[in-house]
Image: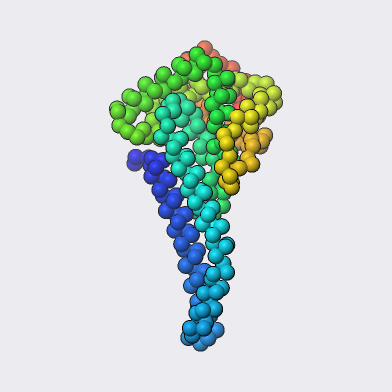
Length: 265
């Protein structure tokens, strides 16, 4: 099955949210009508209907808040899609894909789910540059772009889920994650450094958005790093995967990497 593109997933989320709002409104009206009908032996006069209309109008402010939040969420989703449409390096997108499920967003149930805000991305890319260094980062960018061209064969939009399944991309991501993990050998100091970089380079907040006052804390940092380094964590626990990785990196210290990863659990 071909993985869904971000635009299709966004349309499905909008439809689910709109459906949930419509169902909530209709259910509230229906319930009140049924209650009043039962109270008056199955018959409603014009006076009863006028009284119900007054009651419904009294709930206008409450419904306005709900619908206004829906519009805010829709606007935020458009910003997310804009990020997908920007010509960002493939490597950047693939790294973010490791933890994009953690991004805060309001689901169809009306509740905001997620641990981190998209406002962290400018700081994340800066930290990534500093951890990997410009030469290694450029190398990862070139290899990733070439792999995308090979996988997609000129087809647009790029299917990032499909690209992520490519074996060369898998090696590129593992190599980057190994470099990041080694950067966190002095874990306490590096966590403080990373949090500082993120929180001092947050993208501007959207007024009224659920992440308006968000900052990265230590707990969210641990969750973020667990997701960011998920491929490396699997490789460390797999003898065959680690052997392939050791061939590319001249026998990295498996025990040390395992210990560093465990500090984020």
